[in-house]
Length: 493
View 1 (tube, rainbow, N blue to C red):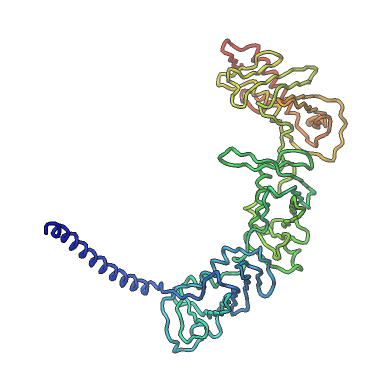
View 2 (cartoon, one colour):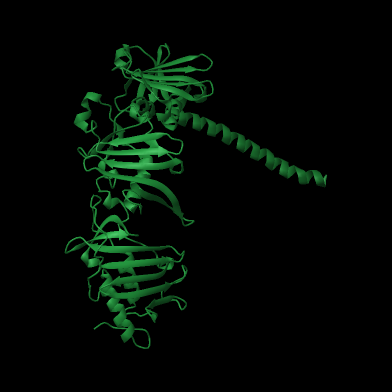
């Protein structure tokens, strides 16, 4: 009896909780059903989206959008106003989302039509959506006008007499233009598959040929790289890198179908910019863009059946010259890549020896900087390095112009710079007078096409430790070495 009493209390509690839970579930169901009716969340289901074989939308003005799937659910073709559109140019995610909108949609209410169909925009239909399934079933949605408050749209399913009041989402979906179904990436090529890219600007004759280079990967982010192979072998500038990355995944603003007869009006008869992308497989894709017209570039591309346009503000670098799109340093090495630099000019020769580990700085105890075998680790009171000033004057020397057509002779050399790297690569830069203010640049005794200003050799920028000419930077370092104090500090008068 004691055991029975102990079990009786939990049993009563269990029964009470069960009754409460049952009442709650019934009340909640009634509440949810009431709420669904109030919010218009009753649904109409035509079929499962994955069972769709054909999906067609036609409008009262005659526009048609047709999409065809195979038995495995793969999109095989599409048509816009009867014209074939390649399936691989369709945005499948968008299309499938649209199909889902129509296969199952919300219906606020239904009512028997006691008025003329035209009162609801159903004679003729504003839009007609036709779905054919793999099983052979055919579903037709006749869509009429939107309600006065824009909250829904009148719909007749197949030939039923009753009219459904569909949600505003159906109204928005059926009105989508064909452009919305198109894949806006008119070029979509992985860089790893590319052999070379040729960029031509027709009005100026500028031409650049580049090859993909190994990307810089810090472990946190990746920086894309390309090597310019024509008109000279150089690194691509950051602007050119960004432009090429954008071209390989070129996203347009919209399609802009026009007749070929109208191409001249949009600069497409003679495109201003042409990118030719050759892949390792041998496939070649061309992207052709007009000059800027009204804030847009108009274009065509291989395999794309429509003219398209893209906002000018979304592309950087198109209107730059080939010179502006390459690394304009005449020669460039990082400090930890240099072993020795020998400079000959003004009947003077000096040798600049460097050893800096890639993990260290010029102030590190084991860093090695010498000018003609003298310790060159001399600093200004503010910490600026005289040796670093000489390094930047040599290896951050920028070209001021290019002249690819010139054919200068290698004579009357005013300055010779010979570089030995830590990998034992040896090369030279020679500057030959072009006129009173500029020099031709020869690299390994071959004219590079670069022109540099006289200031790359002769310029004293005072107490601002930047933009010095090589000769003046050398003289200043020599002066600092001879006049430094015991701490390795020299304050320039």
